[in-house]
Length: 164
Image 1 (spheres, rainbow, N blue to C red):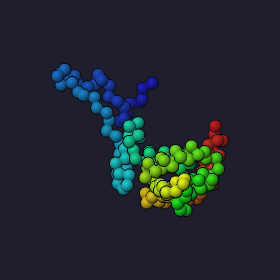
Image 2 (cartoon, rainbow, N blue to C red):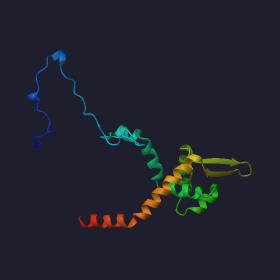
Image 3 (cartoon, rainbow, N blue to C red):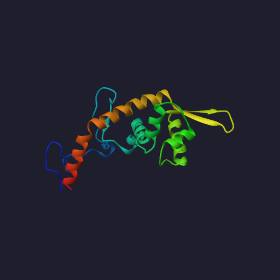
Image 4 (cartoon, rainbow, N blue to C red):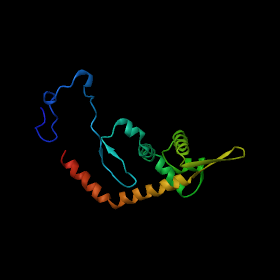
């Protein structure tokens, strides 16, 4: 079913004047609507394409902090540097394999540093970088927001479940 006529209704092809073949109009995508005009998020547009989503710096950060173990490790390391074995013993349910993968990802993203101390066996110590500490501040703020609005979120979830 076609949309009712109105200001947003598309113009039917018959209503367009015919252009000579050499001057045929080129179809153009509509200009995206700017959602935020000022501040840190200036230039955010919609609709967001898959490429926009994958290229967005926030997407990578949200993937990192939205995984199961990164926030836990960032919280532990916010209290001070720790050795690998200490981290391994500190988090119940985290396999050594997953600990290694997560630490490598955090190190790759510049959020965690690894220092290898000579010895037999060599000892690795992990610590937050300045970048990791700055991210941790935002995660703390998000955590405070979640605690502050916990009752509202729970009520919204109950209302939603009631309507299913």
